[in-house]
Amino acid sequence: MLHRPTSHSAAIGPGPVPSLANPGPALEQQPRHAPQAPSCGSEAFCVDPQALSSSHPRQHTQYPYVTGTSVLGITFKDGVLLACDTLGAYGSTKRYKSFDRLRKVNDVCMVGASGELSDFQYIMRLLEELSDDDFCMDDGHHLKPAEVHSYLTRVLYNRRNKMDPLWNSLVVGGFHSGKPFLGTVGMIGTSYTDAHLATGFGNHLARPLMREKHHPDMSEEEAVALMHECLKVCYYRDKNSINKFQLAKVTKDGVSISEPFALETNWGFKLFQNPAANAVGTW
Amino acid sequence: MATALPVRAQVPAAGQATKQHASWSPYDDNGGTVVAVAGDDYCIVAASTRMSTGYSILTRNKSKILRLNPKCVVASAGMQADMETLHKMLHSRHVTYQFNHRRPMSCPATAQLLSNTLYYKRFFPYYTFNLCAGLDDEGRGAVYTYDAIGSYERVGYGCQGSGKELIQPVLDNQLKAASPLVLPQQQWLSSLPLEQAVDLVKGAFVSAGERDIYTGDDVEILIITKDGIRTDSLQLKRD
Image (tube, rainbow over all chains, first blue to last red; front, side):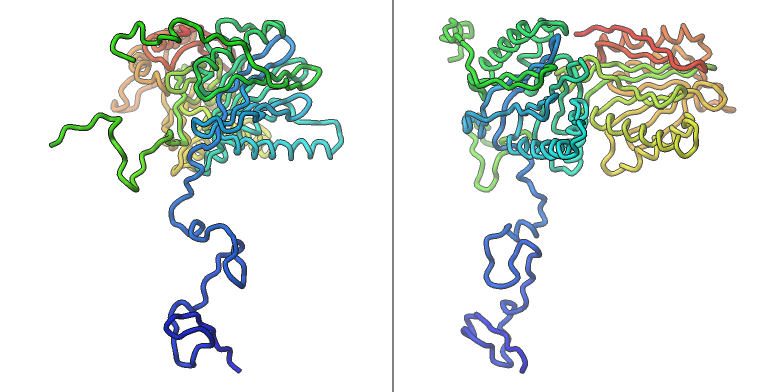
């Protein structure tokens, strides 16, 4: 017996379709959307097929949602310091206030991220896979800081080539074979190493201080003091930052990331209280 | 016509959302200048080491020169990420070439490879402006100049990057190149002695550093002769 199609057409009514009736396109085999859609039954929760078949390119990766602000990094005599605040901002909303933006990769290397934090979590997953592989090999080898930096450069550059960027500026800090390593990667793959670095606003606010006060053979105490000063300046002028920082250190003894701390700030400056005093006509 | 409303009073019409975020571009110009001068038995390659974006200096010490072998280097200005990728690509091709041929790649061969590599990305180009320089098979200086998509030409001297407009005319004047329109073709190798040519390149960079904000900090100078590559450097203003 021939299979009789079933219709839910309003014109014909529910049930098997009379032999010569044509219920129209509603009955014709609907093209299913490959793996995301179920092969029978109703459309379950799935990726919006409209979005999949849309001729418009995907655009939600074209700008960031939850972002972290500047990451600062400096080298000192026997290691590297990275520092940043712990804020994940949703636009200008202080959305996540305890987000760890400094992460350990392995015993000689750590990464700090500004920009889209979900992209950073994805990047950390990539790095963790690599570290896990190193661990499973159990041959004592692990990625060196320069290799992590180079890897991240390739990842970010590759995604830029796909016009689907990972919206991050990353800082890689490490210490290997007696030398500190400090490098950065931008969202289009722009990468460089230097004795001191800062992403985003930090490049305008903290970098001049570093250029003035940094020298490669400074002690850890001097480096921490410089870092605190840079963080404070960034906090005073960067609206998207909070007074809750983390400071991470890589030395020959490994990676250590501090508990969050606050810096003492002073908002009692005359010009803070009356910022328009010297600018007639403003308010 | 009604006078324009003050900016703050403008409200986007429904369905016509205004952009609230910076638009994204896969390209950036990180500035920098590269110069190469070929002589009868030498070749000078020089590149500034500043790397910028917009009005910010990212770092003061980033090399723009890829040393493939003692007779051939590639120097690139433009976008640093593309430059890095291009250099990695050329480096790996050079390694493979040596496995296959048991000798380093000659300068003319590298020049053709660079052109092909650039043209391979014709429709999403490397935003780099390159010079390939070194000694040719006869031991004479060779400079090849490119555009971003691989058109190239052998010249006696070349300049690329943000300081190009400032330096190229000086080289044209000082190296007294015969016009390429003169027939039969004139000798285009610099007849300057090596030391004078180095001074000329240094002078050109000092001048460019005065006017071009993307040229500064340091200049890395390679002097390629049959004895190998000698390096020299020059400090520019750090402003």
